[in-house]
Length: 548
Image (cartoon, rainbow, N blue to C red; front, side, top):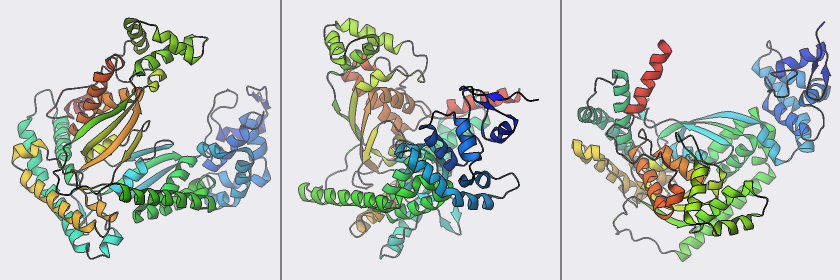
């Protein structure tokens, strides 16, 4: 006879109960276990009930879900013989039960217990940036401009968004001609750019043909990505919890861009199948009121900005790329050291700060060095005391760099509109190769088209802007995240333009707070002709190990 399983609470499950539970938990008697083979709505409801009960999770699952006829659990989970359609119908029929559980035993945070994977394909780069702007609860992954070539056509047309407002306007022909010319130029320059890169950086004996071809191809794509307009179609995969998706949908519904509002509807449809209980408020009366609140706030501030702020002089020369440390706390070092000491004291924070005020500079530095320790690589990250110091940067850089920097999560970022006002960058490789003429001409044509379209269609005009043009945005982040960002984005395999941003952020903080920046040991300040080559060599080594 099978011994009854016993959980942490001493709760015994008989043989029949074990049979019922086994498909849905990774272990029947250990205190740490996982859930499996359960729809998201069931897991969310189960955990919300868990927070208000003294029963074990397995007991709640068994008594209040598996054995509760009104839950529709058997129909929802089904068996291996049932089709996806049958399970979908069962899930929809049982929604009312699970919603009662969620409402009765949880609050907004319960929606973080259910998640979903979503694929958003064939969306513009403007839409991709809107999705990736979510900081918490959403994990995005986007199609790369470095490893994917954007010169293919489908049905004789390049892959960019034919924005309906533009395509039904008097600007339609100009829009298509401009973007076609950008993609034609990208396509025509791809091979000569790759040839120049290979001529300038010939393969050595230590580098395999595979690694060399991959690195030089990536370099050519990096050089030419500035020609890609924001209308370029891409794919974004998302994993997120219900609460984050609800907020993301609400923001998208309130967007001034038609594409983003349509995208919200498509995402809502998919999420209504996967986690309907967690995202329904994005479109109900409460969600609609929030959408209107966001629209009203945007319109009020935009109106006041037009009233109070003079329009820029279009005759002024475009500004050069720049990273400016706008604000920092001159007392940051003392505050950080006080927080380093705080866990080891039995005193309030104010007293810790008074103690630090009395320490000599060398004593503070000793504490900082002890806290940072002997970092062996960038993954050895200092603790939360470094979150006490904050820095605000204003950045003007090409859109390609913005796309990469924007993916960081634990900071505050806000950008201005995509525009051609700040001019564009021309990669030095194209100048050296004698290929910059066609590149610049295509960008200048795009700028002319933008200036014409933007007077009639200010939002849709932004689809015309190529990634070589500069955009201005601000970043506010703490010292701990600064370590992560500067060390990651200055790595040799990174794109040169965002490497320059990370390097500049580091040097400016080092200049004002040398003791706090001292531990930032893995910021790479060098320049490289072929950024990806070392990473490709490491990949070769891994591939070799697998075949041994």
